[in-house]
Image 1 (cartoon, rainbow, N blue to C red):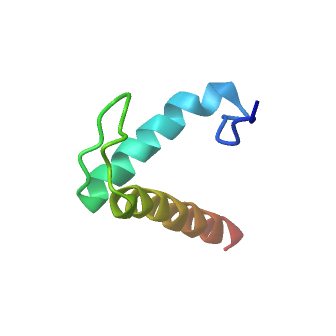
Image 2: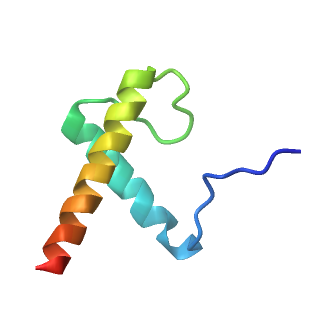
Image 3: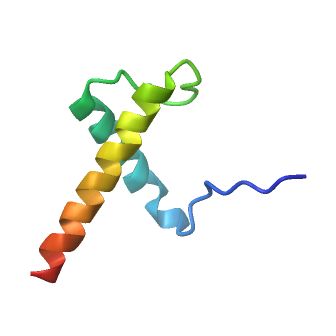
Length: 65
């Protein structure tokens, strides 16, 4: 059986990550719903993830200053 690689390492952070994902989806104009989102295109899902990474890198860079 394959293991899931997208598990949350810090369970207390799960709600915060979900809020972050929903916020990123709104910013890029993707209608993300709670629960199943298997009807998203690869482009839509990638734009959400890309926006999340961009914001995390920006936050890290601000922390270095």
